[in-house]
Image (cartoon, rainbow, N blue to C red; front, top):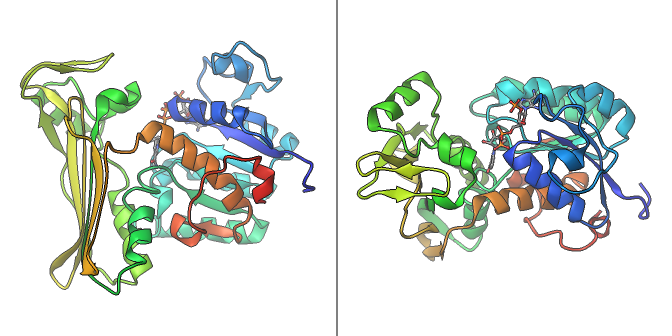
Length: 344
Ligand SMILES: NC(=O)c1ccc[n+]([C@@H]2O[C@H](COP(=O)([O-])OP(=O)(O)OC[C@H]3O[C@@H](n4cnc5c(N)ncnc54)[C@H](OP(=O)(O)O)[C@@H]3O)[C@@H](O)[C@H]2O)c1
């Protein structure tokens, strides 16, 4: 690619997150969206501008046929945002490799797939090497707050005995699908039914974040224990623009996970998302030499930050070695605020 050519992107998945990513891409210098893929009936066949509810057409028609798009798009990076589990998205992303395009996905499991999907991880690594392209799963969490940022902070420690990361967010400020995903507004029994039926899964990514931290520190964990999702019960009526939560009903959820080594809980991640959280923060505490305590208050806004880190990862993935990489394998994250071609 010459310095003059714009970086060519295909947007794959134009839901709540994918649409926001596409909108940011359209604002960025040095980048061009050359294709768009989604299966939703209300999107296929429409111009990207219409799907994004912008008063402009871009001459990019949303297609449900990835091969048709990729065979014509001559693209550099596919930005993918359709699902959380690698077994669900594998058949979407693996066939992209043969076009030699890099793939950045919001798929939580892809952020560190070696523990839960080792076979699929191996296949992606092999495809990447074969076709000289790179796969990366990232986002705000997993992808940054409870893994990459934690790992970065360990860089100033001589010794570490324990790590704890806590994220508390007021879900009222988050996108509506997210509020639904955490069960906000449900009665406790409805919440429990949805947990049983798998309609509420809790936070996907705690295991991946622990795996990534342990791998960076070369800690050989005995196991990772992910606690059951717990409802956070509203102590008073709380609401977002879209959802009203009665007192005694579910405002959201809480989930913790533990990395255990020699019977010690050496990594603890505690994720809380509910409507009405009074104090929002991200904190990381490292018991070590020296001890490190970092607190971001209010917590980083997940919707904006996911979109940002995906877009900011474009130059990083274009410069990355082929195969499957995770955030800990790339140079430290940084914002791509200038023409993105300057970073390639
Ligand atoms: N790592 C992180 O920090 C992070 C942060 C935010 C989001 N995420 C994850 O990113 C994913 C996307 O989030 P979202 O809120 O945008 O979800 P969403 O609103 O459900 O959007 C997903 C979009 O992808 C489409 N789609 C589904 N299967 C497809 C396929 N096989 N081919 C093409 N398009 C397909 C959907 O169409 P239909 O509606 O017709 O199914 C929908 O338009 C979720 O799994 C979410 O958990 C991760």
